[in-house]
Amino acid sequence: MKFFVDTADTAEIKSLAASGLLDGVTTNPSLIAKSGRKILDVVAEICAMVDGPVSAEVAATDYDGIMREAKVLRAIAPNVAVKVPLTPDGLHACKALSSDGAVVNVTLCFSAAQALLAAKAGASFISPFVGRLDDIGQDGMGLIADIVQIYRNYPALKTEVLVASVRNPIHVIEAAKLGAHVATLPPAVLRQLYQHPLTDKGLAAFLADWAKTGQTIA
Image (cartoon, rainbow, N blue to C red):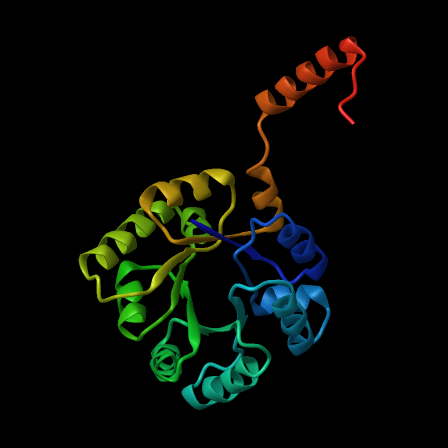
């Protein structure tokens, strides 16, 4: 499974990229607004930090507007993935952009039917929002299972399942078990994957025993 980080905080991205665990980045208008910076500047800086795809979302909702904004975003760097909404105009733009060689991330997916349409439109990534479904009492992981199964039934579909709205490490593990290709995680959740109390306890015991020996390695 590939790990993307879901943030526009360039300091966080730089830190996580240094770990070697980061395969890409996703942003959205809310994250850009939180950064307080201009979208073109933020995306350019992120693209210089990571080799993998950096999702930059259009703000337009009509086909012509999406295509105009996509042209600007694609010009930032070769690793920009244009993020479009799962709407009729968004899918129309997805088809046109993917046919022109663009990497397209279709976002705000909440049903398997939507995911199938995005794949047929040539999406590079489909972003189902598991946490938001869980919030309203629906089964976010059930949606991931359905999408993965449908895509596997049709090898000609090359769209990768990018699990979004991830709230905790359990979402990540369940998505990996189901065979999702990518999870995009808030920085805090990505760091939670490291953590286990027995790891901390074991390390403390090893260090205490080592200190008793009075030895040094270097």
